[in-house]
Length: 260
Image (cartoon, rainbow, N blue to C red; front, side, top):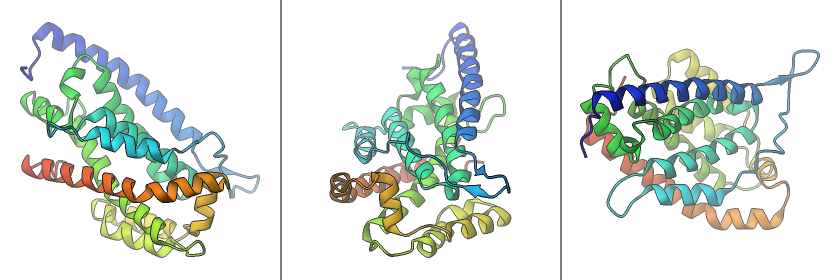
């Protein structure tokens, strides 16, 4: 399959993608509004209603397992399904992760638009996306947002989320997770952020509640769900780390780890 579509097809795909991205931006804005920091009459933050955010850890595992193909491909559909579910988890944590969940929603929507657009057949895997965008001068061009660049930002975030899952799993119920989350951020995402953002994010993470509070938000106090998630967590962490390592090696091989 050639990675460069014929002119007529290319023009149509650009129209389709432009329409999808406009709709995606609207969806991203709506999502941002839905998870924006609520305030009371004194302009003080209040807890966000998370009743509609039914986080399913099994969907995270299934998505990342489906991402890894027997042919060595990293399939984009599975990756995005898993990441969309992870974003529910971040939203459930509350205002601490608002600065992250807004951005994740936007990036996932961009990649879903490319997958559904006229060039969708070239976006079936991370490898095919990189090849297509490299041959069509999209990687560093300014005419179209690069899917490879967008996914790289999600990839960097996955290192932090995977590490945070590990911290939750090994912590006792009454253990505060603020210090470990802040230190983990400093080792991972902070190196890609400017000084002001890094300091702000690090300070916010110190406000992280203990494990018991997080588990209750995720499970609604259902002990059966908690037991299921506790048993599933090692497999999820392993799958996340595996996809992260494979993606890291892929971007390294293509020389794209520092894609601007």
